[in-house]
Length: 96
Image 1: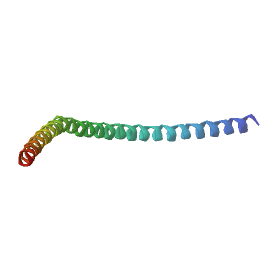
Image 2: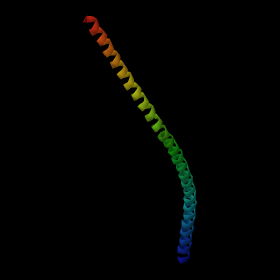
Image 3: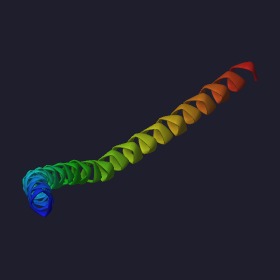
Image 4: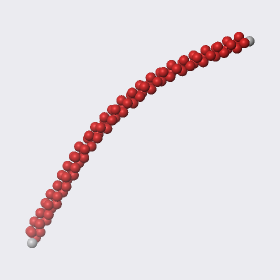
């Protein structure tokens, strides 16, 4: 009977070693996949950083254009007010 137990133990040890080897191979594959995914993530982060940098470069230009538009609108408002005042003075002079 001890020979039979020894044979069963040997089979279990062999089965365990096979399972362990399969798990090691799966672990190696997952490590490779993980490394690939990390590289892809880094590439995406770099691309995103470049895009954000471009947006940052555009912001000062957009602010400059907005400031110029605001200044132009203010000038037009002043000119319109002056024209209105002149027209009012002419109308007042015509009635007097």
